[in-house]
Image 1 (cartoon, rainbow, N blue to C red):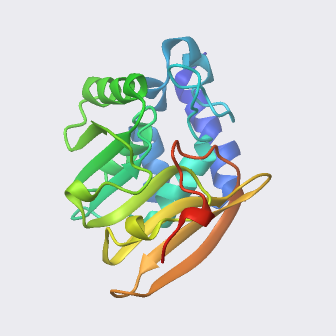
Image 2 (cartoon, helix red, strand yellow):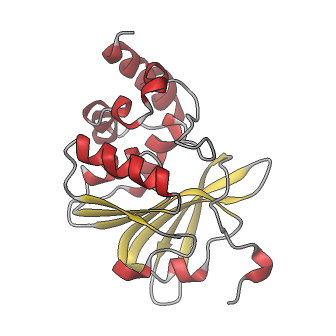
Image 3 (cartoon, rainbow, N blue to C red):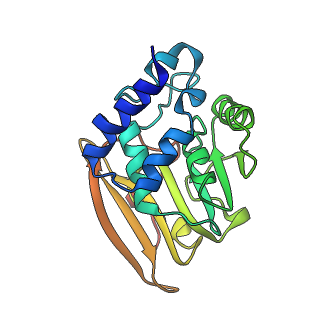
Length: 218
């Protein structure tokens, strides 16, 4: 397989048609090598329109087009601190790290956390860290954040997570359940107000320990 041809085809055939037109984002997809963040046995599928399995087979990477669209919608800036809930392979954290000041990626599965940390280290990413823990309510240890990216599904976005955003901060999440979920960008307006924008529809597996709506307290 010609890696660069496959990368080019991914960008032109999967990602551009999904309204990812930001040239900086498209450039990042060439700079950050996705093939470095997949299991060796899936290297030939690194650019396929698939949710590739992560170690253990319980979780999957997002579709390439979904990763790119989220990156575009969040529009991370160089001075910003980012939280990724669900480190996965580390690829999303690496993409954000090229745009952000610092990235914290939380992962509940020890094998996946090690996989992500190893991938980031091997790729020379120095401003992203993987922490082992349950991020279903966010990660208050390093809050507040400019950007929070939830890489798994949520029935609803918990208030505890929203409160970890800075004023003006943005959160992306896949909200709802089967068969279709809404990818939302939530912007914190002030201490109590948030603006919600539905940007596209997809389906991703729920986060481990995602809280069901009946358990929410507002």
